[in-house]
Amino acid sequence: MKTPFCAPKGRPREFCTEEALAAALRVFWSKGYEGASLSDLTEAMGITRPSLYAAFGNKEALFRKALDLYEREKLSYMRPALEAPTARGVAERLLRGALEMQTGDVSEPKGCLRVISSVACGVEAESIRDEVIARRKSSSDALIERFERAKAAGELPDDMSAEGLSAYLSALLQGLSLQAGGGASREELTQLVETSLAVWPTR
Image (tube, rainbow, N blue to C red):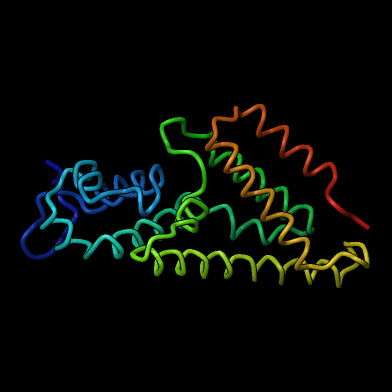
């Protein structure tokens, strides 16, 4: 019989850490870092506070692990999108990837975890906000670099900056996630994606 425990060495835990982390991610994704209490987390994860601390560290460390999981699984479309042959192709892969992520699994929370948590304002959340902003900047830098190559290849108008185009696309993606979080339908979000692609700047 297959064991339900995930820890392969030493004394087995009384829960699967991978499943517990996935449950924690859903709580953070639904409520944000500040809105997720330890009681919310332990109840969703099916563990006690001592078990949470032993397996994941404190709430901040748990959030960072949940954010890693979110980026690895929910945002997995982002890195391949940068490999599209054109700037418009990059935008299309990112927008359609975000659309599918927001509408593909009806049981998942809506909105963007990185956007939700970047607006945390309490003293306790300062390091979390800084972490999220730093990760978003890393993604933005990669997008700017890709658009700089597109401009050098003659794909974009001469007066179009890579920084401005990256900010524009990021605003579209954030807007899509905010509308999804506000209850927009798949049809409405698809219309946003199609309109954005129709007006994408080309030379």
